[in-house]
Picture (cartoon, rainbow, N blue to C red):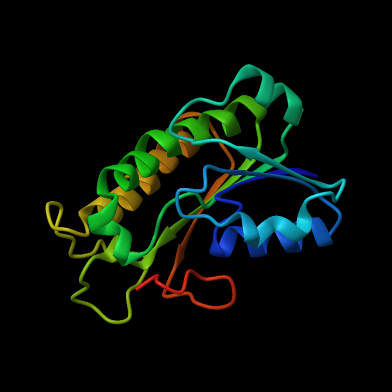
Length: 190
């Protein structure tokens, strides 16, 4: 399969690129290195099944870059700064990546009729009043607080993904990841 991984140089995205390339897929990582680290994918450079497009998903992909990818079968959308340390450092970037950036990635998926998976977060529940949270729980989010750029950004990315699934019949899935850590994680993540 031809697979695109947005945020492919990030903590989780780089591990996903490793697995997909190891399975024999043709993988294109898209990353602008706002928080992703080129070192995380350096070992994949030169592999014929891996390529990197340095690009900010907030901007539409150029026609040349899109043509160079050919037909895309699946998109894993992991592009989003997720560190609490970034919520005060780059809040506007985070909000726009999760809104306009997600919209652009959904358009790529729709255009290619590609399967689409977005990684969301437990922060979609905010400061939950219910433990553990069920899929039916809507959360307790402060839409104007210092974490809102991420919490509400991810909630919006889930909402627009759901619209594309309903309105465009996109094969899309949402995964809410909880408190992940491990190798290749930014040591100053917070």
